[in-house]
Length: 340
Picture 1 (tube, helix red, strand yellow):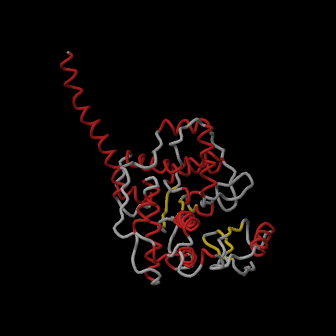
Picture 2 (cartoon, helix red, strand yellow):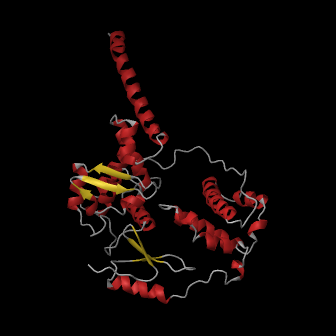
Picture 3 (cartoon, helix red, strand yellow):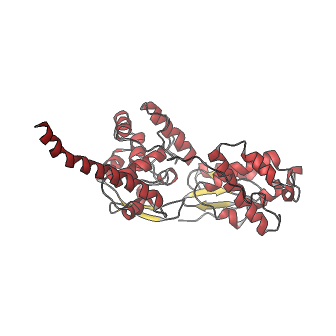
């Protein structure tokens, strides 16, 4: 098959992008060479590039100019998964508001005041994003003093995303029968324990000899996960796309953000609370593994966690429940004797 070599087109893990220096990434739909793909390519090619430094906000030494250059750095390209999209959103918002300021003159007090306007989790994401950017600036000698040095953001203790209960899973399954896209989405999250960004990329080509091959976008870990009969039956009963199992109404693969919106709509249809998110299925899957008596290492082999601390939390909870049941069971004979 002839390979197309199109200027400014980059391909990454089955996705194709138009990227011209000074312009944002544009995802190109369809298969390279198809009418849909070429129309999007011609449209992106015809668009006027954004000249870095052309505006007053991008004058040399400004925050805007530094951020624009940072996007082309190895430090930026080393970011994986959904991190680049999240951080670009944060940086572009900051660039819009403060891009004309001189980077070298940003005081620590300015950063502290900005963080005070954000919610704890948003503040933590912001400081991680900006600190990575500032360290790159230091390596390029664009700045001599780190304005984020010594700044800490205290985030309230939280268990994070709500893990689905068995009752919530049953309610979703009752409303969305086998054969629907909603039920397939639930099954992929529940029976693979993978993140949203990895699930939307799964296709039949990744299943070989009853095993699912996964390369996690966040950790770059390669996993081999057995496909349980329940999941195999749901996949076989559901219309799927050519490249991905989950597709939109028009047959296109989902972007992570679009899938979240659709999954939320499916949850609403089933009458589930707002706290039920797709990531909560990953937690429910890990809980099931722990309740089944799986070890920390066995669970991590499925989830892909590099650190075992998060996994240990699930096994501790399962062990506590098991030990509590065993302890109470031992009191049953004593209680019967007293009643007698």
